[in-house]
Length: 342
Ligand code: AMP
Ligand code: MG
Image (cartoon, rainbow, N blue to C red; front, side, top):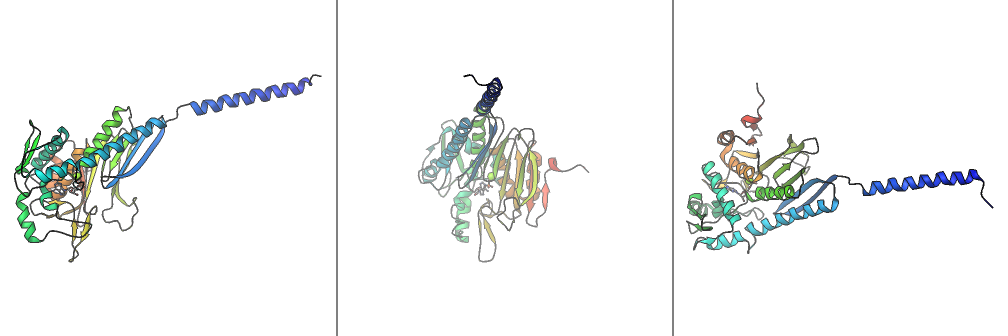
């Protein structure tokens, strides 16, 4: 017995529809769909965040893993708190003998010396000679005797870097160095290099207050906020200014990052004026924009120490840099490139 033709015709259409649906579903599933991938991890004593645009989830995850591994490597190598880091080894011995440095370490010391000279010594990695004796978590600071005794050991001119031999020797017995004001920016630049080599064209990488933007946010700028330095809530959206940016590095130095309040109610924070050995006093937040994060990181710390007038003068002397400074009274100051024409 054969089925009535009407019925067989309906079945035929149904099958055709089902087949078409299958093809559509298959197309959907196999089609490459680009999207944003993002991850945050605690590295270098801060939050490291990577966001990137990719059309292959596995490759996106691989890229994120490569960035996190590089951040971790830089922390392991330059952390002053890890007993076996290259930096700890130098600090333990470079006052007694010339110590071999990796080419990367030479590069970082050289760059630091460049910013010391540029800022008239406001940026100085030998601040650590005394800075080492501040413990912000424990609320401890060196007494005035120790401050006076160690002040002469803060002097970048006494850092003897032999570039050709790849060696470093401290010119003062109590000298120590710390790359805390430049290493995070450097790590961000290294991360962006990795992503670029993997063919990624839209990404943002940040390590605490240091960020770099690769490309834009797919036709729109990235929106980068400057934190309210005196925010009372933990709300990360409490910002004083939001800037639309792309293809740029941006670093913020603030007196709220690591600090404690002393017996007199004074804020004792982590950015030290190398001349006095005390926390820099005039500013509470400095944001610097420039081409690469190694440099914006160093310049933001330098400007923080220099204060409003000398800080703005430094920024205005650097063609590719701009900055937003907030002083103790809460007044916001802009470098020449960010001021609106009258
Ligand atoms: P940043 O948040 O980039 O301004 O870096 C702050 C860190 O820089 C501090 O936690 C110290 O490790 C380091 N630092 C503090 N004062 C100075 C200074 N005058 N020159 C260079 N590095 C400094
Ligand atoms: Mg810095």
